[in-house]
Image (cartoon, rainbow, N blue to C red; front, side, top):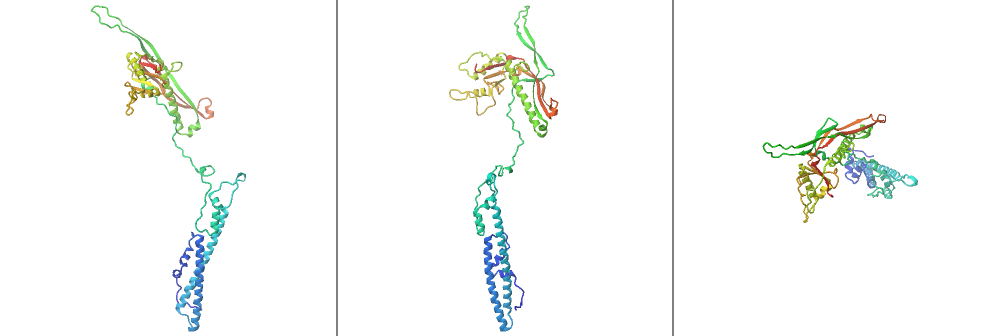
Length: 439
């Protein structure tokens, strides 16, 4: 029997003398693949065999020493202790490696069974395979697992992830902006040309001079002075109402905070749009305003220039206004007609008057040009607008909301109404000249 004459040497000291030292420490690494585990197991088995042979030789040597000398030397006893400790450590590592390989095999089998499962689709057709199902069904993966999972494996995915409803489409959340995009609105310009006031009545009356006979002349001493004659008549402009309304549900008005502001803006714009058309072209019939074009003086050229252009026509209209002692302060044209005038060129291809690099503003013959679609194409209006007409506002824009309209109360509906009241007095029709370019 061997006697221990000194403490057991640390396992690390023994492992440092042989190749399996790193292998034993790697057994604790859970991320090790199957191929490396198998190689380590082979190394541990080989080392275990070698240590077993050394143990056997050391035991025989110890027995021989005991028979010859009656005791075992300290060196032989120490070597025997080290070999026995190493043998125990190698057996423990051997068992751990075998357990790890068994667990890895079970995992590969379970993964293969899960990935190879199929789900039948409608009409016996298979449903689209997920990424995991395609990997499990791959022959390359099966061969990779059967071969100990050494190296790498490439698997091609057949159905890509898309935004379709059967793929990742349901995960897409739309982004919504708070801005409400409305239809473009026309810039109102005609009202700004006229003098503006207010009234507290439903009718505006004013005295309009209709005749002037001026007999003023030099008179001799003691002679009879000449008599002049002036006539006026009472004219009037009735206040007209421009209005419209829309129905809105109470729920929509309560649930959409910005809806009321949008409705308010649209209703006001609708009033301004109708007002501009009435001021410029109102027929004066019924509840219509008597507009500027309706009462303006017809264009009559003082003379006809050679090769007359649209520019010449406007200049002759300005002359006509000046001859009536009302020098024009503005020109109203359709945008298309204004573009034609701006593009007028001479024989050399040069623009007649337009400076395409620097434009101080739309002007023609020193007068500002109002380019608006409220004017009809091929028509023009020039004149002394502030002297010619005046707007009297009776009521500014009013927007009211009410549930007391017909059956609104029981239907939970609201009526939103907008209206304004005004009168237009064209006091000096001679100060306005209208015409057509084609005529």
